[in-house]
Image (cartoon, rainbow, N blue to C red; front, side, top):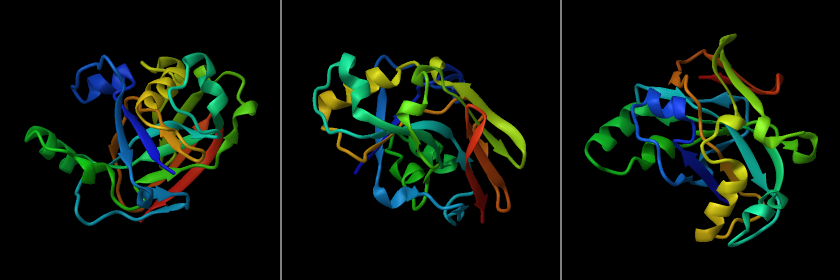
Length: 202
């Protein structure tokens, strides 16, 4: 399975980090070693600025290549939320020097995912309200209707370059409000006001 991530997909987050709005989806990948479905996240010792990025995620239920946009949703089976933990200090340093920032995104357990919901239980995937709370205070909140590139187009776009396979996870981008986490923090994630993720930081 693959973890396929979309960067710069919400205008408010692009402005937050002073980036440029892309003409095409910005795609990167996380290795499977980053996947974490437990209730614990252990802080790595190589960064002093680990930040949370809440995202709606989709699980691929059917393999496909060069998928028509009109058929995209038939390839999705489940939906949830994920936290793309990011070593912002490492990312910023490498971006400044024009270097790749793989280790800023791809360290152990940096891809934390919630329990996944059957896609048939979601009335409109382009109108999913989602949020993240830190220590009981809401820090990120948005809706999938604010994506620059919606999931139908993302599946179409990604599948033009690579085969999407059953079990793949697609992270669809984070809205504004990303911020630093510390040991003893508790993060909780919600879809349409239903809590589906809870994680303690150690």
